[in-house]
Image (cartoon, rainbow, N blue to C red; front, side, top):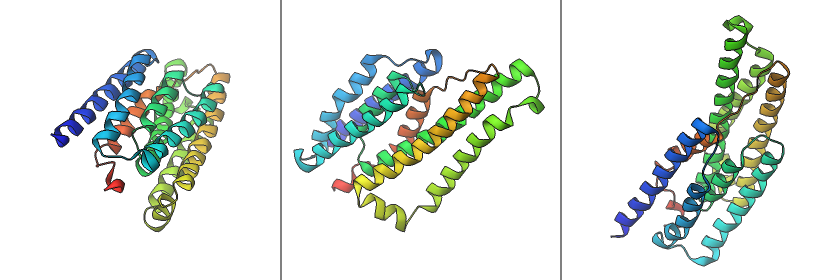
Length: 224
């Protein structure tokens, strides 16, 4: 019965994520009820996994508060929508440190790739031809995403294990990586706007994809 209930909760989360991603791709908006549903299902997930209030649940609440506060800053500078921020905060209630860090890094990579594709597509529509692409705009973004991917790959093993043994350090490193890529995305977006391109990256899609990839593995192994 416990496994069935866990499967049901994961299935509900997956459906909500797919729905949120599709909605964000279509309208650049994520309904509040979807974010609320994800957040309200989290206590059931804790209970089904046998998490104790201290320190397990307390850690989840602290992580969620930290993630939400960090991305409120991204919302304040216009680089992420309010629905995306709420979705990240709700998901942080579900994911322990290691999967959360993985999700945030994957989100950055997917978000950067989406931004590059959208800028390139819009530019070719307005200017015509691949030769007219704004390489000075999308080049740094692409290089930053590649550097982040290489860093993540190189960090597997000793460095990653050391970080994940220190939850605060792991989250801080992930936030620093996300902030660095976000800064380059901001520079690229501003350069694109000067040339009449206004990319609106559907980060809900990036969040949904990265979380679904993380959910392929049992995410509470560290509590067993």
